Amino acid sequence: MFKDNVKREDLNTAGEKEEGELRCPQCGSTRLIYDSTRGEIICANCGYVMSEREVDQGAEWRAFTPEEREKRSRVGAPISRYGFESPVTDIDWVGKDAAGREISLRKRLEMLRLRKWQVRARAQNSMERNLAQAVIELERLGAQLGLPKAVLDRALEIYRSALNSNLVRGRSIESVMAAAVYAACREMRLPRTLDEIALYTRAGRKDVARCYRLLLREASIKVPLPNAADFVPRIGSLLRLSGATIKRAMEIIDQARNAGLTAGKDPAGLAAAAIYIAAIQNGEMRTQKEVARAAKVTEVTVRNRYKELVKRLDIKLPITKK
Image (cartoon, rainbow, N blue to C red):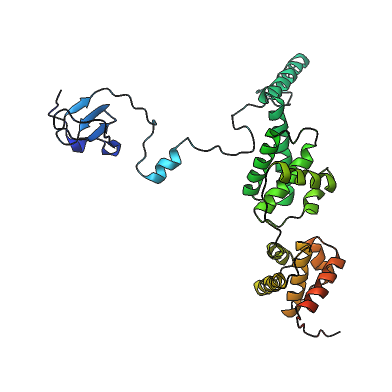
């Protein structure tokens, strides 16, 4: 069937298709145009209407630019990987209806039972209930430690793999999640120590360290070796030091690494000592107590690492006036 009154400029060329399977039976052209307003497939070469009343399988909205299309699209990855993204309605504890009138005791008990079964229906098995509690613990740790979303996502992946491998069974959720957070920080080179993470958990440091070694052994997690240079920017920002001092501290750590002084040393303590030396050299005096508090190490650690670096690297320090 052929329509003489069909003009190409009247068609919606935004829906033009390049389909190799379909060919025009009149001229054999593969340039086909889909007219969404009429539901027709038309040959762009001769104007032959190949099909009528086609059902549009696309979206009900229109977009004329890639940015507009991406903004209006309602598909893609989930908003968050923390839990269940299905929209749910919570039954509140308020004892009043929409008009503000008090609800009778019988209705309150009924709403209480409905709320209880609603909470139970969200998690279908024990693994989902365990994961829901772990997500709450992860969000709490992330807020306390100020962790970025990428680290929290990676920690949740590690915990999921441990949960699927039955590594969480018989262990507390807090200790395993804290170990997963520490492993994620180590992978992404975020300066967080095990003592700092264990400080914000109800589980002790020994339990968190035991679960961390279990994750490394059973979950096949590869973490890089700790680097003292990763702790320098954080300690320097807490002490409000200049960029030149932070850069000098990084240079001191590089010299110590080349001299073989970093093996077996606590990276936070080594970074604190380098910061202390660089601050003295640049005239930004900070006490060992201030540096140790910012690095979350003891003053004895800062003092010992400081003396070792100055002696082994032959660092010349300016003479301070007493």
